[in-house]
Amino acid sequence: MTDNTLLEAKVLLLEHDPEQYQILSEFCQSMGLMALPRSASDALATLAMHKDLGGVLLADDLPCDEGDALQLARAIHKLRPELPIFLRRSSDSELTPAQQLVVRHRWVTGDLVHLRAAIEHAIFSLSYPRSLVQGISTLTCESLVAMFPNAKVVAESPYVVHDRIIHGEVSTLIPIESTWCRGYMMLQTEENALRQGLIQGFSYEGVGGDLNFRELNNMLGETTNLIWGAFKNRYIPPQELSKQQTQVPIVINHAHKYISFGSQDPQLCLRYQLSDPARPGMPPLVIVQRVIFNLHWSPEEFADFEAHATKAGPTGELDLF
Image (cartoon, rainbow, N blue to C red; front, top):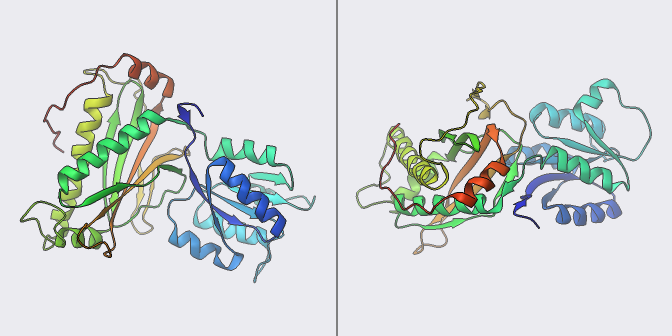
């Protein structure tokens, strides 16, 4: 495994054949895919529960209560068109042009070489240096500990997502720009969970759960700013920015909790659990971090920067919104 390694991704596995299910389960493990096996009747409900998927594996002969597998594929595509669907073909019947748009990735039963190539192209189209991913996780944990000193902070394993659904009601967004990348970082969480965490005393003394939504927004905003300051200090050369000046519109649909950065590339996703060490049975506060290099991403330039970078100490400075 190289330093530019593929991360994990969650996929919805809709497969009824026992032999194929076993083969695909082992295949997913070998590819770093976290498979969520479901039946046709559970597929759409699973989409509603999981907002951080990378794709869908679907058998074209999957038994469905209503219609067939291709109708299910259309329903999935209508709800989450950003998710690539990989259709296992057990027949040689031709797909209509409309069906081909829905399931752009098709593979014949047994042809795992073709499936692997399609997944690498569609789900893992970007690779991230391991040192960068670990660095982002470390500096984010340190920032969360600084903002919530009484909470136990645990980082989950990072993975990539193609979903564009926002987690929770409170989100922050800050630009990231360097010689080797341009994009954005997001933090997302549920408002009630953040308020409950403050009631439990996660943050400083006097910062309780009676805050209104504006003050909760500010709490997450200050956390984002702290992470950005640490990121800039560690990864961005002084007075050096990317020469790329392309911009694309960011589309936000609040009714559907959807955000698009104008790119089909996968996003780096990291989840952090904040819990009360004295009350291990309480649900944790989950903060979801996404790093989106939608404007410029060059792991080769990052490797060159990292090779010549000097270790800089903390400056103690924060940017203001």
